[in-house]
Amino acid sequence: MAMPPDPRTRAFARVIGPFVAIVSVIAVFRMPEITATAFLDAFFQNPVLVWIAGATLVLFGILILAQHPVWSSAPAVGISLFGWILLARGIALLTVPQAYERIVLTLANVTGLRIGAGLLAIIGIWLASVGWRTPPASRP
Image 1 (cartoon, rainbow, N blue to C red):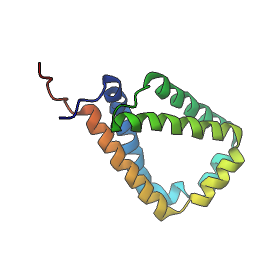
Image 2: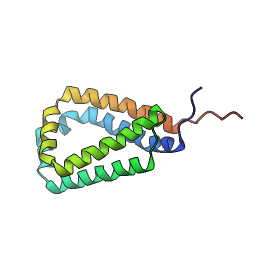
Image 3: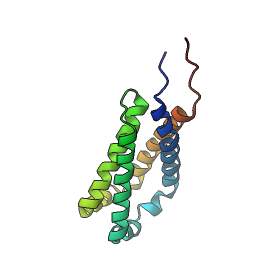
Image 4: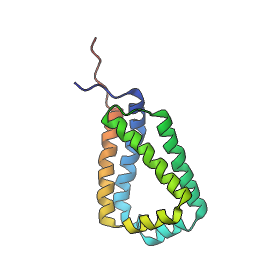
């Protein structure tokens, strides 16, 4: 029988899971709007907005990594990897925004992004279930 997830993993899964699921599902339906060149250009042409987004990603990445140093289960690995991804993306936005913009514009394919967002939604739902599901009672 599998052990219940670490309490920190459950706490982070309760927040990260629904966030990833909700944002990903909305992204699937709004994909043409949010991948439009005008939308991406407006974001990347505003250095203050890029800086704030990068700094916020760094902050939340460090927060997750500092408060969740757990790699003992699949959900724990997913949460820790999420923290590392946020940190890496934030550092990239702060240090090389032009390169980041080129990569985003290259990958801004609606079909591919919809598939990716759909997979993220599934991962988010899975993490939410890990966080919100009542763990089995421990046996003596």
